Amino acid sequence: MIGTLTTGFGVWNPLIWLCGIAASLFLSWLIWQCGESDYEGDTEQTAPYLSGNAEPEKGAVHIRAGNMYWGFTAALKPYYERLIPLHSGIVNDYVSWFLIGAVILFVVVILG
Image (cartoon, rainbow, N blue to C red; front, side, top):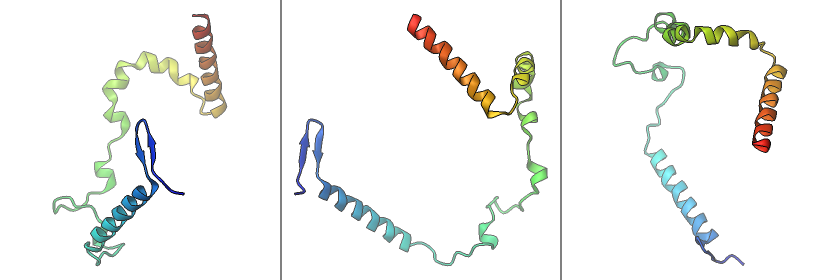
């Protein structure tokens, strides 16, 4: 019932694939068993390693996107001033803009 299927692109044998998957899972399990078993959550082990330095407070290292992309937004300020009023935050508006664009694209493709 389960045999080899020969196609123009290669060979498909479910038993070979199942054996390969089983061998991969067994090898993964063996590697997992070689790992350390003394991990404890909610301890110092869960803290990020920062080369021995203490972890800074979030406010001290947080970079706002407005600062990070200042040059980009300043260069495109005329574009953003026209674009921001179009964004209402209502999903229906975004879907209608998408549909209008799709209809225009469809008309251009059909008539073009």
